[in-house]
Image 1 (cartoon, rainbow, N blue to C red):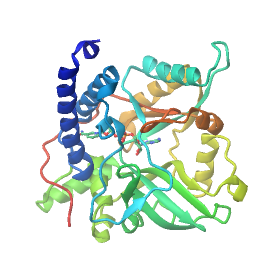
Image 2 (tube, protein in one colour; image 1 turned 180 degrees about the vertical axis):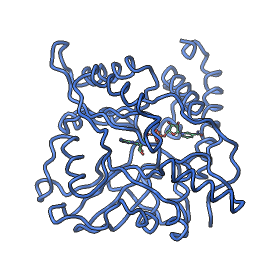
Image 3 (cartoon, rainbow, N blue to C red; image 1 turned 45 degrees about the vertical axis):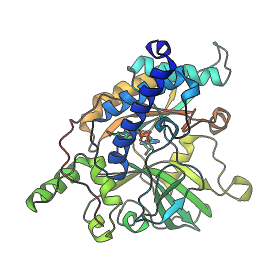
Length: 346
Ligand code: NAD
């Protein structure tokens, strides 16, 4: 590969340039909520850096953008140390067939499955284009909502999250003593258009896209302003939970877990499906790709997850990503518009 042919001195210079560039883009995206380049461009440079680091492992350092999740938490909010780290997901940008196939092949290899072993069971979901949130419930009451931040430490945004009507403030009696629900806070397209219209009327800055508007609303210092920015929520996973030995639920599969979250009152997307093997993942990617424009909110891809929680534990994690999940992206939907300002009201 071209990366491998580069001499180490050249590679070190390239790597440093990529890291500086990615850090600057990430700061604009995660900290200022004002992306300065399209995601596809960010992803292209990110993959180029990953390839260079793979060819020159001696140049890999722990502070590389490839080794971390998201952005630094803003100092205005109380920091929250996550009981269970909030990680990223490996991104596949390949075509339907090769992206899903590559994931299934990796999973089967890691699990040591024989070529004639039965298909692996997956769950296929939408990849919502919003921001990740950890909702912590103790004895059935919402006690804290935190952003992902750098994956280890996020921001306490409980007051703003309480303005989201879809998020239950209390849970049914059968919910465990400690429950952290993870999901995506997002803004529907209609709400985004209405918000931008209002901003224009008031002569205030407009937002680049619904993700950016949602992130700005969640990180508002004034909950009254956050309340005027209609946000929505989808649950897709768990953080900390009372262990089964201590009376917590004994989930066997990711699908079962999602159904239970739904029964406890959390919104779970209707498009969640189980799938057997790569062929059904490919079919799901095609089907959702065709429906994508009709959805009332933005998605930037679909996510495939190994369904069995026992197999997920066996697969484990590699640096910032679980080995049991992958995000399979679609080509970018929206074009970048010039950024007019920075959405942090302090
Ligand atoms: P990511 O944000 O693409 O993926 C991980 C996230 O997916 C999770 O934290 C969660 O919030 C979300 N998600 C949505 N639906 C989910 C589901 N069903 N199950 C699980 N998670 C789900 O990955 P990342 O590494 O955190 O962020 C990198 C992405 O951010 C890149 O794809 C890049 O395009 C974008 N980015 C863009 C810029 C820019 O300047 N344009 C800068 C930095 C990052």
